[in-house]
Image 1 (tube, helix red, strand yellow):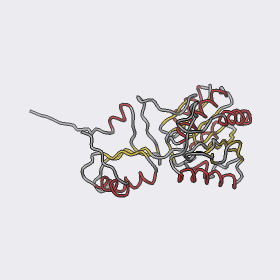
Image 2 (cartoon, rainbow, N blue to C red):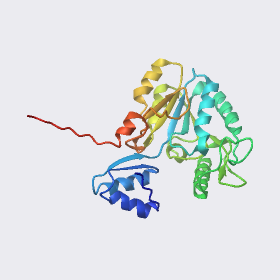
Image 3 (tube, rainbow, N blue to C red):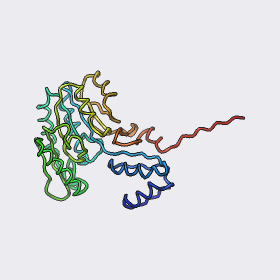
Image 4 (cartoon, rainbow, N blue to C red):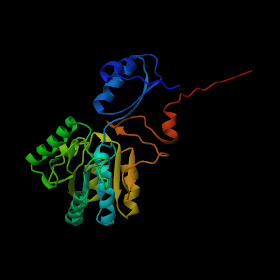
Length: 279
């Protein structure tokens, strides 16, 4: 039996969270909403499974296939207008290939057509979910520019129906800037250089989120290090950011608790019990 109740989070949602009825509360949304759910669920110690924000880094090493890395990162940035929690949100590129990579990335992302779902041919992505989200994305880019970031393409809203924002590439943003540290949830990608893999790991892990990450390299020594040293619930190697249903989609740190997909995702909805019988 499936019961569907509709209402606002501040009313119906809160009532469900403080109720003794649910065995688990599962939600995909913002960190603030997840924190509110945890506070309310604590009244009855109700189990929660929360998929929250993300700020996925992509690390691009000089030995990688640049064209394949560009294709994967663009696909991982503009899908659903960048409104996916495991989208690439920041890109770290090793210094020897930084200029070449940034140029190819800019050309590729500029070619990503934004339109409506009814356009022919179909666009690469459409508008953002609301004017509020469009204003948020615009504000983050404007503040990044004011702090010295350079816009290689985009950087503005797109006229026409819907809340569309042009696909945007930024360079010159600082590691501690808002656009590098906070989830944009829109088609905006800051690109930053690094020298060594150790530096890249430090930059990638320097974030309050821990959902998805990726590494582009042909060096298996670095892949093995990334497996344990990238502090994210998911790491993609030489491919775009989209999980398989048999995997386990789970975030670390402020990206949430619990998870979904695969055997481990199913276990989130079950309770363990041990019965001891002695005759």
